[in-house]
Length: 422
Image 1 (cartoon, rainbow, N blue to C red):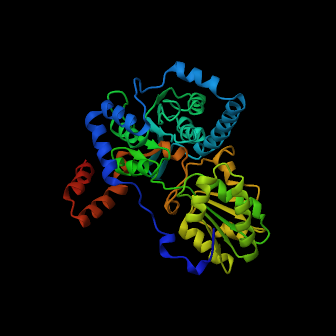
Image 2: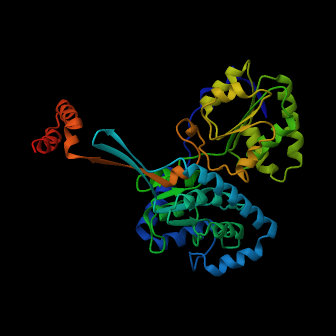
Image 3: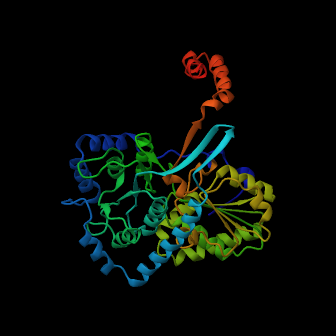
């Protein structure tokens, strides 16, 4: 892991990284649009080495999944679901229908309406991301989305990992398809003979899935265009180097492209963390992935003062931002761009990944500059209403006519004038 000075950072450290083979992705999307289920079967055989006879998971398969998942795992998934739901319900309480009287007789309002049909993409790969299913589906459930569909690659013995199926059942989802990758995004976006199109797609994926979401945006909504996992830890000399190292490696093990960064004013801490990473890597089962990402993208950045650390963090806009600072209040008041903020040595990012109630589906690749993490807000529409009484039209009608005249839109002006003549 490299130790560098803050003023040595290059501009590409802060830049958006566009990934994914656009030509290959577009080809798959177009084939799914044209050939539907047949294309899904062909690409599943090609990429997952699975010949699908039935795409949708059956009730029997869900029941069998419970027998394959250890009781303590089921209990942990249920507790995690409970915590996510508690947090999501509090989020929902911040949205409400209202109508206010702007001026006498003119009533402007807002209605909170759930999206009807949402698609959740759950990555497969080497490990089952059952927590991702919970993070994406529970806010939709709390928002009263009436149809939630799950797509996940058949990476587990030709089917979806039983932990993901159990997590789906805990949320109450029974529309689950053994389809992954770009083809799953295309199927949810445009529909096939078996999979009905959705209104919005959420959930993380590899760079090809991310590119696919970018391609279909407009035909459907998407949560955000995410990249590899990221963490920035800002720490001073009071921080525990073992805690910092463990948190950096926890994110580094996600993917060889993951980004794990420490920013500190303490040169002594920097060297302690570098040594601790070397020691902890030796005993890590995911050393093969974590060591590559740490060596490729990991950095320990030494800065002169707190303001320099804050400037770097705000410009990088990381997915996860952690403060292991003796007195974090100043930092908290100045830090603006991050997916989630973890304050203090005991607030490990891993708790945000799993059991704290926070959502771990967060913006990466500088997207935290303009959006936050997935939540109830992503599954509702804020729709506005207007109700004007006859005797109140003149109060705002003349203003509307004046502005229409400035803009040269005569039809707009006459739409008001015809009413005011009455």
